[in-house]
Length: 235
Image 1 (cartoon, helix red, strand yellow):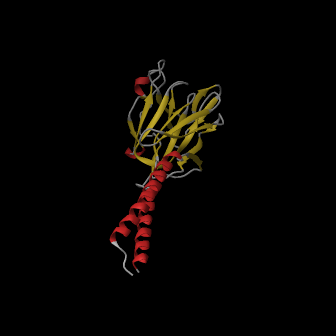
Image 2 (cartoon, one colour):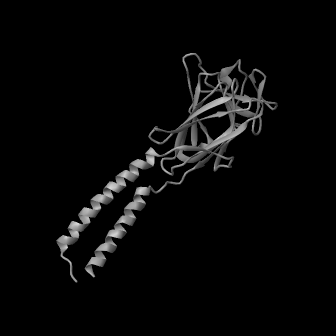
Image 3 (cartoon, rainbow, N blue to C red):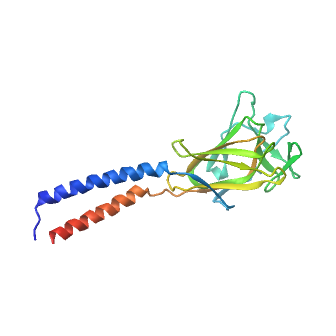
């Protein structure tokens, strides 16, 4: 049985408009439902122990402060310190075999080696920008006062995709905290954190492969379905 050409065109137009609407909904939904979840310790494709950074004493901040951006994680990210109105040197590189004294009897022991980085008090903030968005990010963390560290995660448009607060036990070795984006796209393009003398060592990250958006898969399967339906009508 033959089918007229204008019938096929009308059929494709009607169904293609529905498919296009579906693609828009899927594309919009992929960002709307992006979130961050905590994950167990992992060994990343890139890591940073800060052992190559030059430390100094707190009384000579020009020897050991970071304002950034400084390349870290094997060149896959940049670390910057965000100044406040009262603090000129937001991040220090510290070195101690026995641990970093955070005050109040709190001593944070580095994850590996002797070095780590620490925020200068309670008001500064640190930020890591990944040259390629990452699927996973984590490290070994500590902080003074109540041990709380607040983190915010961003996609490659600098839109917030999640946040978390973690708490260090206030003594001994730095403790693992890690995160993953539950959506393949957007992945984590940047992370900021703050906390009272918040310190970190042994950063781990997995650089993500370029994902194929869900909308592309839907578009392809939709076209295949339309072609099949047209073939059935022709026969």
